[in-house]
Figure (cartoon, rainbow, N blue to C red):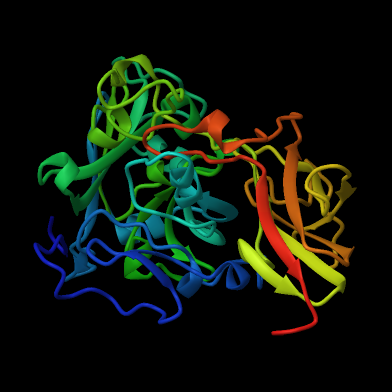
Length: 393
């Protein structure tokens, strides 16, 4: 593509924060420490998880960079950055979560295939850019369209990023046109993150943000948008990121029997404590994040400090000084909530956190119930062990 290229090796990778936990060096996949993750409601780009499938693309000439929109539309169009910036700009606070978040814990039950992630393959940012619904109008697709006059039902995003899973071809994914053309879905072509231009790891110069959906659909380094009849047939839509039952293994898997995963389920994680922590007996603060996909808010976060025998409700917050109410007009519908509760811990115990979203969806109690061979969507109750001791602190 003019102005944007995909390197063939890893010699020109961008700098990264030294505190990140590296799960894969080439391609680079890393996450922050869990305590750093919840230090603020909006995640700084340095501490936002890095999920990559190949070398990071390089912008050589921003003025030549453009996105081609074509397919089942009345007329194709090339959009340069100035064209996209001329459209109304929107800021959307949205949480992105890798479908493999908490995969490492799932793998301890039974081995799974994929990059290992602790609990921090998630982040919350303010994304700035043009609404995809406005962009689609430039090629003759009115807002709230579900099928174009030429039979287009899906919007495919193609990256300049080349990956081995596509046999050297581009990373790509799609969403339904009904979602893409709906302004209320807040799908963006984003060029800013937290008020600054996107950095290279996060998709500079332009990426898609699909709020409430697993991160795999928010394609970075956008090269083309195709309006197509069927959903994208790329590897990451058809042979990855699908939810299978525990009985399916690599010998009997049939990828065609499951739909691509879109919304992420309700999730809740304790971040103030490690998997095993030593604390001084007395008051202990327990805090973390909770999130649900599809724009569903968090109705409740329950915490137990006796292994699940009794429960207490944690406080929930988003923006400082504003009480969080699930689905309230001033709440960020696409964003996580941070929770906190203080408990009296006198003995070694197991602490558990679980959330309920605004549709009353709950988390499974045991990871065994949601185990799957790709290790995605581990939303089981989050458990940490605490040893109460006056020594070694």
